[in-house]
Image 1 (cartoon, rainbow, N blue to C red):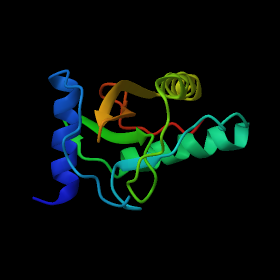
Image 2 (tube, rainbow, N blue to C red):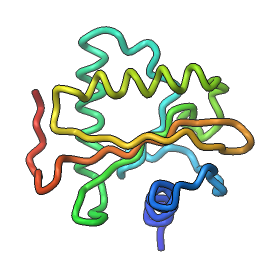
Image 3 (tube, rainbow, N blue to C red):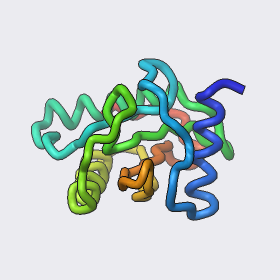
Image 4 (cartoon, rainbow, N blue to C red):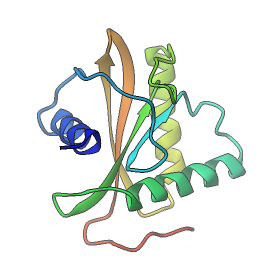
Length: 140
């Protein structure tokens, strides 16, 4: 089983079983696949950056695996592309969650978010997916 499948199982299990920690060593971000690392979204206040993020979410969903009849992707906020921690505090993570919800509100993207521990530091794990039975990627 490759790392992408392992991570998808681990991340999905965190949401299903309401776990609060990630006990897996993340590797450098892969440009392909359905997993994206983000340092922070706190600077995503321009329309250009918001639209870029929406396109990136759609791209990662399209690269995603079918889990429980949904194509999904995962974004991890608070992690650098090289898999090191970004050192965000809980307040920053909560604000990142607010930004995510405001950016996707006018799309057919849905999300579930959870602040979890990774290497004794909090990060924000977000699962994105399309509405039930919606295979059309809406680009606004």
